[in-house]
Length: 249
Image (cartoon, rainbow, N blue to C red; front, side, top):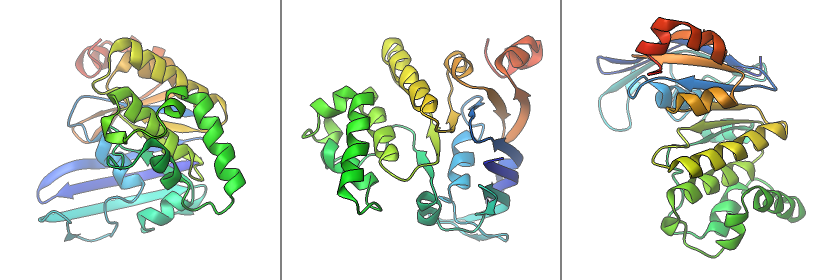
């Protein structure tokens, strides 16, 4: 297992956000996490990459109140449960946050460059940038444009491009299709499929179950902070209770 999260629980004050969640991603997989709003999907990704401060015991949260975190995360065989977020990113476990979360006052080119801050070889940086421009030609056209003025789809493309500039070994993508028109969404998902075809494993959180099932090898269904089902698209869709209650199909 390339990524293995075991028995993750997150409690904000008295609110249980994650409840004993376990999942894994193998080295050549694209795995989906689907489920309704408020299921805990984004919190799960943030916990895996260390954006919630890791401790076994209760601790003071960054926005007030108390956060309790329990469980373990292993990446490529190493326990990263208490590893700082920047070190986790350096190891190649990289998250694209919902809606991109770019440096909005910086240009497209500057955002891409920020993803390569660990790389000191200019030749490697330029090679990565050219591959990203091949994957997302619109970013090449928009190099000098301020990223805060990009469309929703372009912001997601730039966010993924910035992640690919880093030493990424497993890419986590949170809700890439939020707010996008169907045609733009389809184009984006095809490009995500191309990225996976280049050999990069992906863990994808997505509300559009149809698109997610078309892309992924396996899926986890989350509801109220728990994993309530796991399997391939056909297996999950054939379960009438899961299909109607949790997938909206």
